[in-house]
Image 1: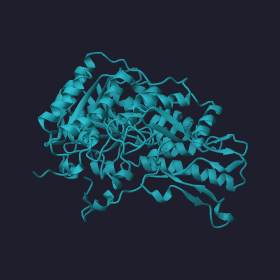
Image 2 (image 1 turned 135 degrees about the horizontal axis):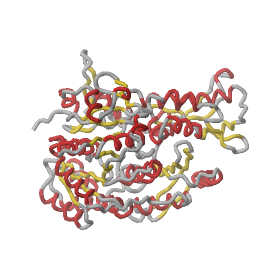
Image 3 (image 1 turned 180 degrees about the vertical axis):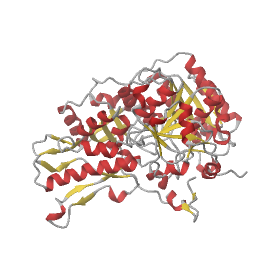
Length: 559
């Protein structure tokens, strides 16, 4: 059977003017800033108007540990939002903006798939409204101001060996991970070691996503630690007087982006932090605005529940005061068989043994959501034609033992209609009223204890090992009075451990923390584990090789 590609489906869709989508939400014209016919920014001051309005129900979509077989988390998020609307609920989705790095690297597109997409798909996957470019510009303005300050006399006595602020760009470029700049003579600055992170993993991206308003944004920007002086004291962006100009670059980016699903339902797509090396959730402003305007809001957190979901709870919910109402854990039979050791070219064949071996991965994520965080959960099986009834029954039986319901999701092929069964089970889980949401650790726990709880309770590690550099970073955070901050773990997305080759539910492993960075502006401590990189590289065959545009401007290859 021949299926239309995602981009073919998207290009054949008839979009509604964005003014109609805004009207559906009850947003007045004075808050709408159109970017063409089908995109708009919504003034964050709208939140003040709805300050006393009751929040809708918040549903988080997460997933099992990712595999090359695919899981379909964003697709499920979009489809669930459409399904809730089909059932007569006023619902909206809140997603992250795709990064150009994965779009041209491994994904080729990240706006959902099949008949469960957000539109305009090409715009969202490429430059969109320029938010990520603005974040990169603000990041690099600060970098330029650091080096200029040193060049112009270094009144703050910055130790050039202890500059921690790196440059950023929104593209996978391994060549820029570690560089030497300032070469070529006195007029070109002071030579020093430097490097680039991908923009979506930058602290500025995290700050934008975690800021409550423009004043909060400026304060967070001012708190960024860029370097240390020769006496070991921190130098901040505020000391360089950079926060005002940075905020000016970000003032439009702070406004949520309104678009629509394939079925004409509203969607906020705003902010785009990676979940393996950043906190992996869309902006607090977008989520809060959606909750004020709707009865139900469906949002996602990046990668598996060990990464995005944990950070959604322990960082985003902690800082924003959000309480989720239910969680959807997305899996596929194919992905679970991959975790069980089945060969990639045989994932379409019934293999109950491989499925049994892979199931512990799903069950660990279920355990974390229901037992560690105390939330009701539904498992969504993103169905493929090759899935056998015996395989589906096995998943149902094992999930039932954990007290969790399973729904078959067919949103890729059927859109919202294919998600109605899932939507009904999510609504039922919410209505049961068994929500006992709790955070994994307390603010007052020290940094090592927070890392230990994440590693042992969420990942299933036997313990944590620290490099000398990581231990020094923890000590430094303590000396600066920042031990009360939450921890953002940077870890491979391909395993519950920090070794991407350990699939399913690994046991008897240690998590190795090699570096600890202070993100004082974002308000968290970053613990970098294993071999994870903050600037990814392109794969052997990047998706960019298949992306093209014809003479009429029609884009192809975005999956």
